[in-house]
Length: 50
Image 1: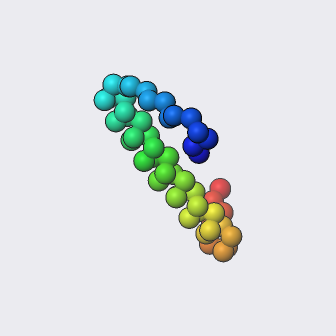
Image 2 (image 1 turned 90 degrees about the vertical axis):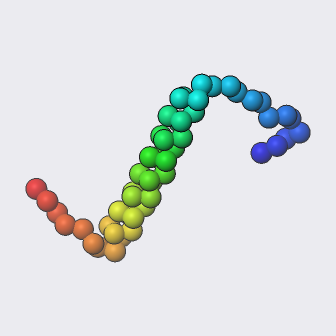
């Protein structure tokens, strides 16, 4: 998305960077799990539990 402007740079502590990278990984894994669960549901592979 470069519209002719220079990209800005932000400086953050390394610990904060590492924390954000871990959260990004967790978010991606959660999205994949949700995607697989949705596919299971569409294919009727689910069990009703009370």
